[in-house]
Image (tube, rainbow, N blue to C red):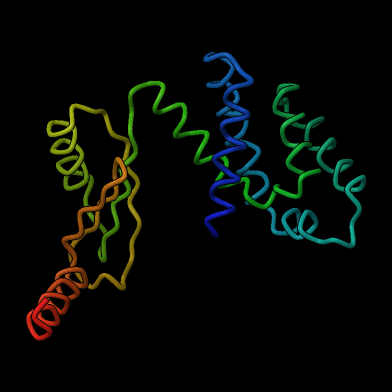
Length: 185
């Protein structure tokens, strides 16, 4: 996703967050997750909303049909219609992630993204989280992505930091050090 789309997603998440009370925000998170699940699970729905051949009025009718079948708050309905009108419904997943981070921050919880070349056990994941929680005095919630290109090791992203202990990362560091030594920098 482009930097401008990420920034837009954060702004929309902030706008939704600031329009609600803390209790409403938590309920809205659950509803937003439900809508994103509906949206992402239907390839036809995604195609329809990205197809310029369908008017915004046609797309609004579809949204309203979804609203009739699934109970969403009026605030969330208005927000989703705003995204449609602003042609930003395609960044809904990123908006959800930014919104989720807002709630986690309010609750004193931070997210950790663990990238690994091979699947890791729950015990390994808990050990990493426990170490981070002890070191940073923060509660963490983790997600794990399998990235085969890493070859071996893990890369951990948290609190704006990255710890790279992958084979790829070590080789890259070795290459940079070698090049610095050769050029005398």
